[in-house]
Image (cartoon, rainbow, N blue to C red):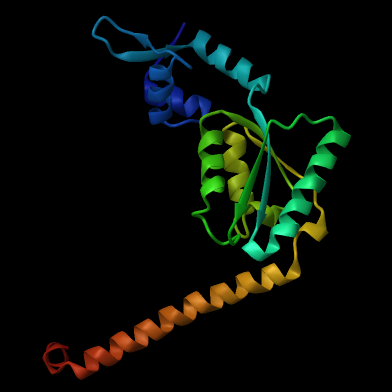
Length: 202
């Protein structure tokens, strides 16, 4: 039987060392201890963990998002549609998470909580209406990342839940950000040109 250091075991099961430490404290996955009180893990623990992971004991969550508060009706329709889909497929939904914020925003409160919970092994399925409800760009990377943590994303692909106007707004946001950066660079260059002391050094 092999023993594994926390770092080795964390890599084997696809979580961070900090997650292992927290699980040890909370009794979720207790580490073995050497006579010198060093933590280690065994093949048996690996088999037990992967076996539980295969049984999908985590929660199934509906995640719905719109960009602004004036899209509340669309958010409600989105949730209702996903609930109907889950019922039709015999999927038991444990929780519904709602977010209001751009698909370009990586600081959405509920979205970040969802990612953290997936990393902690609490979520096994996320039901969404469309890829861009989860994230506007880089969806494939997040999908692989969550899969490595035992979480599956179920995409219903209802195009009506993905308004074209919202995409236009996101594109305008991108243009606005880059325009501000270009303006900032020009302003900085003009300031340097106007500063004689800096100009001398250049």
